[in-house]
Length: 372
Image (cartoon, rainbow, N blue to C red; front, side):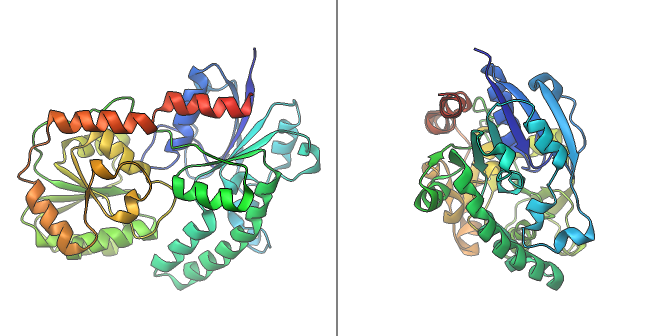
């Protein structure tokens, strides 16, 4: 049977750097391996065109994101309205295949009358209005703070568009509970990721690593906290790596001999940093979806230190070392730097991670709902 699916993506999925679009890219790759013919629609914004998508999809169509000044003057969320496209609607109407909207931001045309009879699905990456509100909390720029608060209100209102979907696929147990309580037709579909096996190295590394997209205000706030309250309090080498770190963070780091900043590492570099670190430390301040950088670190790195917010309802708790205060993090680092990573620890990760986070199993689950 020829099974074809439209996927409307918020940006260009590509092999991941800094965590963006990981779930989308590896979901597309997994669907392709199961024989699903994908018509991919990408709103190109921050990422370049990705030639590898041509081998995974039957068709790939790019649309420009509308980022003009007047796009902000709307009752719709800017993140949604900026991804409006009459051409997209025309392309979706060329056939009757089901449509998977990859995130709430891509749902501008979901209520269009011409698509009323179509089977429509939504992959929910976050509870978006909560996520955007968290960006307001940690941003120092007053204009951006106001923008994020307004956008959060607009996203909460626009979220009702999910009533027009056949199914909502939530990325984490916490998100599943939220969407199921509000819309009922929700399934838990855990994130897709690059790890097909545990590649963690046995033995010891000699540094601690925090890696993230440092252009995101919450991640930058976490990085500043680690520099001033944790890394500066330990005698071990520490590295922060990520996209577009602000100058203020760079200045903070420059005052400490044991802390190094790696700016804009490519995917190969970030994976080498994760693999060779002795500890990947990954606390979060806000609870949003499920942080894929934790899965990647567990599949490729050694010890992981997290806080409870990071691992709540993930089934990964026993694979991580939990610390919620700076003092606890410093203590855990000093203890773990003396402890080699063992074969038994690798076996434990294999047993638990692939019980829940198996791309093949989760792809079959997704396909069973879209093509019953």
